[in-house]
Length: 521
Image (cartoon, rainbow, N blue to C red; front, side, top):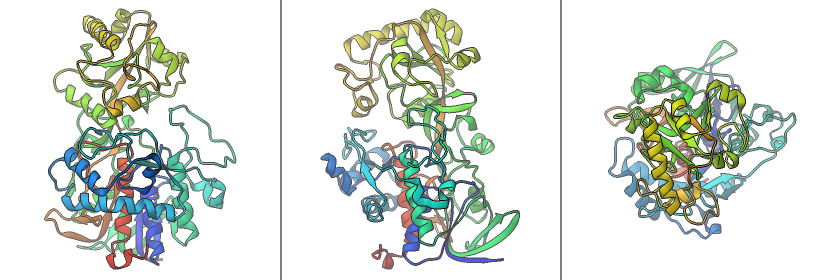
C-alpha cells in the first residue's frame, strides 16, 4: 500500500533524526527509514562531539566566538572555494551553527561545552585554543519507553575498553548515544514515523525525486514524498567502492565507523543524475587491528614515551597531530617508503600508564602477543627484528628522538608545541606534554594503518543541502547531509566534532528549506 509524506529521511542517525524533529515542528508529515535494526547510525557509539562555531555555550568557559571568527579560520584552513565547498555553503554553515545550538537547547536537548579541545589549527587566524566543541549530556533511556530497545547502545568506552551491555541499563554511556536518544525521543513523541529494518531500494521519479521504495518484511512499499533527505552515511563499509575511489591499499576492516554504510543510496542518486565530489577522501584516523577489528590510536599516539616509524625505522610526521593529518601522513609517506603499515613503538612506561586499543593500561594481552597483534621485546634490536623494520634505522631514530625528549623540543616535527598537541599529551607534564624518552624495556609495538571514521566523498549539495546535478542545477526533491554529501572539509578537518557538526547543520537546513517558515523554529 502506497504511503505519502511531506519529508522522507533515509537514515536514523543523529542528523536524520534532527531533520525529522525540525520538519515535524513545522507541521510536516515525516517518515524516517533505516536499513539497520537499531537507530543511531555512526554517532551512537561515539563521543558525540559537535563542532558548532558561534555557539552560546562556550561563553561559560570564557570563550568569545562569532561567525566572523570562524569564517576567518575556515578561509585560512580550507583556502579557495571548490565545487563541494562553495562560499555560499560555508556561509550557510557558519550562519546556522550558532542558531542550531540554541535550537537544540530550546528543544530540551541538553548540551554542554567541552573544556580543553582546541581547534586542530588554533594558531591560524580565527582559530580557538579552547575550541568550539559541544556534547550532549547523559539521558535516562527509560524516557524512550519501548523505543529504548531500538537505540543502539555504546559497546566501548571512550578509551576503547570493551564493556558489556548490562540488562536494564538506565543511563546513556556516551555523548553520542545521548544525542541520538534525545532526538529519537523527540521524534517518536511528536508523531514522526520511524521504520527500522527497512532498507531503501529505489528512488521514485524521473528528473525529479518524488519518493522512495522501501522493503518492509520482504514487501516493496512505495512511499511518495515532496522531499527526500539522504542522511544515510558514506561507503566506508563497501570494499569495492573503497578500492575504486580511496587511496590504496585500503580495507573495510580499517574503518572504526559503527555504521553499516555501503553506499547504495549514493549509486541510486547518481542514477537520478546527481553529481559527486571528494570520493577519494575520508575522515582519516590511524588505527590498529585486534581480531580483525579496527581500534583508534588517538588516545595513545600523542602520549610521551612513544613514536611512529615506517619500514625503514624512520619517523616521518608529528605523532600527536590531529587524526586526519596523521592518517593522511601514512599514505603520503608510502609514495616513497613502505609506510602502510607503520609501527607505533612504545616503551614500558607508556604501556603501564596508557590504554591501547582494547587493552587497559598495564595489562599483558597474551593472546594478542601470540597472534602477533602486539609485539614485545627486551631490546630495540630484538623489536626491530620481530617487526621486520630496519634495525639501524630504528636505533638511530630512537637515539635522536630521546635527545629531543631530554630537551623537551622536537626539532624534526615540532611535536608537543601546538595547543592541540598539548591537549593530546600527558596532563601536568612540565616541559613538553607529548615528549618522553623511549628507553624503558620491555618495548612494545603495534602495526598502524590509515583507518577512518567514515568517507568524506558524496553527493554535491548547495547551501540549502539540495543535491545538484553536474551542471550545477538543482535535482528537485532530493537533499543530502553528513556522509551522504561531499564534505566541505576535503583534505582537512577543522576541529574535533566537525563531521557531526556539519551533518547536523546540513540536516537542519534541509528540513527547514522554507525561509519564510524558518522563523517559526
